[in-house]
Image (cartoon, rainbow, N blue to C red):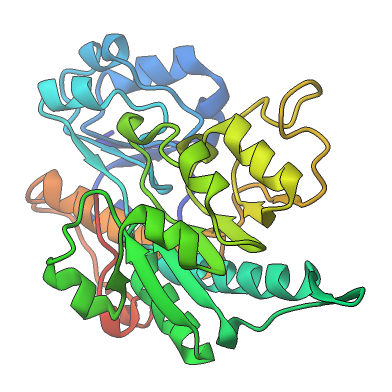
Length: 324
């Protein structure tokens, strides 16, 4: 066995890899850590789901390991420092879900603007149109460019902020997004979409100072881990009505429990990580992942036979998904 696969992958991508490498596929290993560790000792590459933990102790017991692969983006339970110290590459197709996420965020914006009415005066409550809105994107992930195109197609004005991207960076011009300071974004936008990749330094970044000063009746869509927000400040903004509604596609365990600040707030909508979960995004991610894994493991055995090519239609004009 050369590659241990615990996370189910798109069958054609798995078949392609199986013709080049000796693979062992067993999703049941996700709930059987002892068996997984026993097989890990001889693996050169592994594909694991986000629920599985890989710490320094486990990596020390895998001297042949050269690549750890995850179909879903984000560090999750992988000890990145231990991987780096051991010379193990961490492969994640970060852009595979960009199309799915951009579509989901657009649908969420439309839903919130139309289904959460605002007071127009004289007792009249009405919905709003995306075409008349200013959309602020926080985090220039691969999804941001596509989302800006979709929002712009409706006629919305799009601005953005990224803590790791200077306002003079050419990337802003390429995406068609006008960079603004974070405070200005919250103060001026009708809709805010948060796409930040999570790092510990971003914990609670979006807090009281920003949310108290947000534009009245603002709606918010977050595809990032909810911990980029300050929990109490988010609850206060929603509770006061300053923030008209928020849609989170993932939320920290316990945040909705009785006694917590967000419990019972009816303008908070939560879905269980649905944004990137499409058949097409999983297929794109699987192909990007197996190709990168194959390259990292070096030349395949001389007797490996393979004829299947990667279906380029999955990737479209933008090419391959980005790999973290």
